[in-house]
Length: 225
Image (cartoon, rainbow, N blue to C red):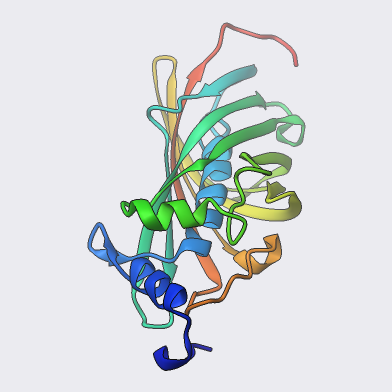
């Protein structure tokens, strides 16, 4: 519930104004993006090389410079806010004969949250949201990979954010390969409250949509894990 501005402390009013500023033509919600970014990062690791067709085991490193982790949050004013996080590292080991034995791991830099508004980003890094001083990274580790239909795959894994670990499911759509590079698209939606992000000094949506466009680079040939 949003309090009338007359009942909000000056600092809360300032924050509300900051978070309501546009980012890339849309409004952005701090809590959501933190989680969206996190999911996105996870999805990236899952999507990139994991679903390429190959008749052997292979290992891939996710490219931080080419991987895009984005999130979008809808606030109570019915506006959408977009933001991004930077991938710190990611690795995918695929076992084509038995996908259940494949693994995906990814780490993102929590302090890299970027909403194109310095003051807002600074607040997002505090204990009200990401608390990057205590939890500088966000991590994802897959626990199950299975084909949903066609070129769509369901990747289940543990997402750790702000010291809290919760299961998440990513929808990964196909992937394209070119030489030793592979790309894929992944998406998911999470509830920020599941990770302890409950700050509500102003109207903030609870659902965070995450999309990831991942690029992986194949490592030297490996015949086994």
